[in-house]
Amino acid sequence: MRTIINPWIGNTQGYNCFGCNPNNPLGVHMHFYWDGEQVVTIWKANPNYVSWIDTLHGGIQATLLDEICGWVVFYQLQTSGVTAKMEMRYRKPVSTLWPYIRLNAKLVEHRRNIAIVHGEILSPDGICCAECTCTYFVYTGEKAIEMGYIPAILDEREVTLEEAIDHATTAANTYTQLRPKL
Image 1 (cartoon, rainbow, N blue to C red):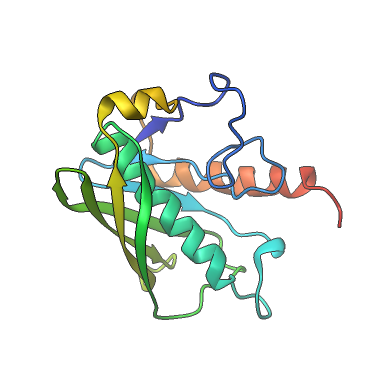
Image 2 (image 1 turned 45 degrees about the vertical axis):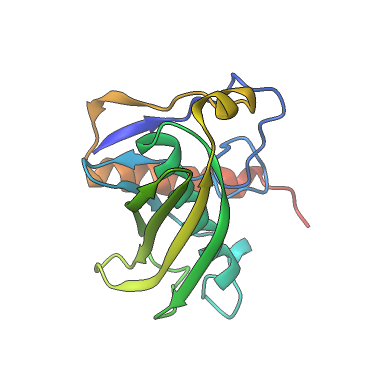
């Protein structure tokens, strides 16, 4: 896997995305990789995102999936867009006690200004716990740039799954300490 460099960090005034800004104190701080056919995220939950005891809230699951599917549009299609429709299917509870979860998202179809992306949340054992199909309205390149889109590129270095897990764990621990106390 190779890291997809987040081009908005330090380059865009007002950038405070709940999904991918590592400096948003309330955000989920997602970090993205490209494995050659899909966008991948390794993510570690923290206790702030629980619904029932030790279970990741369904709304957070939907947020994670919407964000990773959006990054398919950003990286693979090299433009931006907005979610027009999202269909969720919750299959199994996602435990916040797991060392990490893996999210995958893949482009299913692209025609004119519509992109269909399939996303999934996997347990550490590779079991699908939730999945979605997102339909995005995709902007033209000119419109995307006008709205602040910066092309996403890959880091040159290969990243192992173990390194991605370490990054997610460290990020979750760091951000848990930085979050405001409620």
